[in-house]
Length: 132
Image (tube, rainbow, N blue to C red; front, side, top):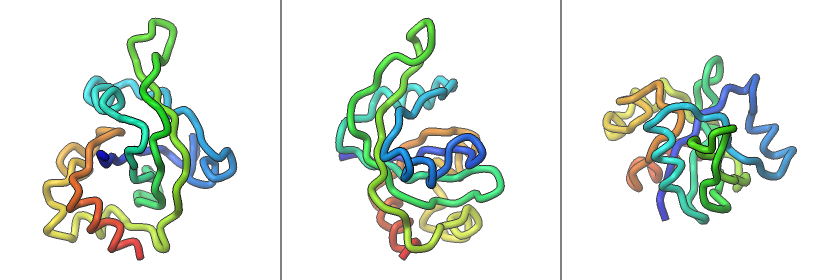
């Protein structure tokens, strides 16, 4: 299983929206690096749901439920189906992530504008621990 971080602006699609819907197609991503990550996702992988903009925090865990499909009229972009797993007991803020030296190499910090990024297993475990 692989781990990921996927960002969404709450005004576009929030954690509450995902819970309400019971799942969604993660679509509309228009970045070449993020597209490669979406293509690499497999059913059963898990992702941190990161609310960007005003919240700037990891608020929950999602599961990838299928493989990537074409997104957009030309089919060159990718969308993947996701479902909620559970919320974190407390959000893990970007400030808290930046303050943790063990997370200094996390893609969220290194490539802050990337909307879909891999998460190393040790980073995953630490973020979940911080969210208890």
